[in-house]
Image 1 (cartoon, rainbow, N blue to C red):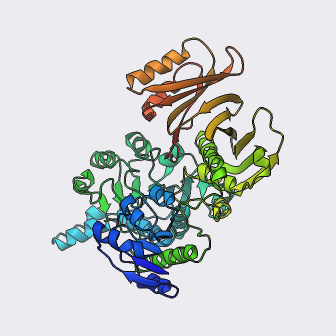
Image 2 (spheres, rainbow, N blue to C red):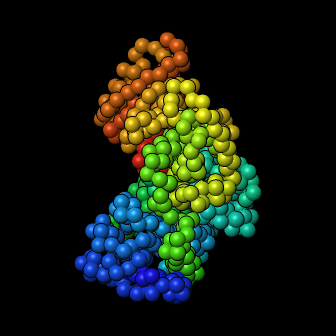
Image 3 (tube, rainbow, N blue to C red):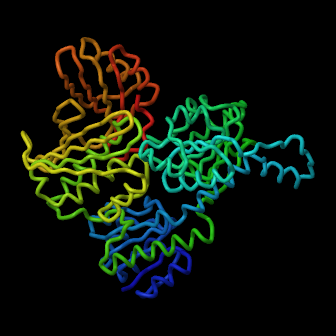
Length: 530
């Protein structure tokens, strides 16, 4: 077996690969050079410097696996790799401790004005009275996203005697209690926290998760830290809040554009900025290198990789049902309210007699894609659910009235249940049930508005008028009702995403109880769930 390492990784990872395979380390290859070289190798390992395009993948006629020594795989054409039967693996957990520690370093720097004191002292200024800081003890830390890194931040913050609260609908209350973290709504967190740190993936729903409206809910003494992803926090809004004295401080390790040339944060004195150093420790680089080596070797040796990004979910015949399971799980995850505790999966019709493990993994992947960058596959589905304290229940029923196959997912939270059912017909996915309402929706990728309301004249027109004023086009709509002028569900497919301001306007329309948004294709942690 031959492995090409196209970007520098820690020597420990290279040595682990060499225990099993012949390894060539050739960094800084041009696209043309990589296309010429890659055909000789069974595996390709990269970090973030090398972009693995479809052209490179097509030249990798012997490639069996591509490894990304890090979390994201946006520099790899995963679809092209999948078409060529190449497994893509990553190393999502090797930098957890380093990222958590860097978060605490930025928090302490903000609290004690470390960077300002250093720069002033080097400039010959001794101004102790202007650099009075704040203790972490007895302060409230608000954590947005209680995944692996967020949890480690909480554990370390508690050693400073901080009160820790978190917003993450996709972990159980039992899990949070285990780590002495109180689960709260995003609004409550924004209002109570003295320090706010974010640990969520970047997606359409989390882009600018913290913007002008959210900043306005914070205390003027609040300090915010972003070591997650650039774009999760509105940099211009934070800079304006700092300049206007509405925010005490901000620390950023990640930026919308990197390097952040022209970012308004660069001119703001009450900010601490670092160049994406969250994973830049000797230990993290070693862990990531060893982790990716193990994942690559697992695939080369015919074993399943627990961090496979595109691991096949069974035979080609089951793939439409896997897509349907992911879609149903994603819909349910975005429509639910409250704190998730239990996932119930019911396999109906011909699904009851099939291998349901790929479908369960796809459901969990769909539900949790709102909150984590961890890819869920056949190997790690149960582990990922257990890590978040979620209970998974399954049942099968060969008898299925009206459908040859039917998958029903019910999410139980502390506020109630959300049910979504789907079926596959002619290899196409159809959503056929949302809670008490039955329908038949063939949905492609896009944005959707769900409104629970009381059926009556003028309501659809009022919503259409609001969307028209916002220049949001409706591609189609569906109305399901239990009785004339009774409870009803309106679903609109939108060509453009619905903003929070427009969603609030729709909620203000008489007889509308809820207005929720769902995105198919690349969804994220929802913040619109009234």
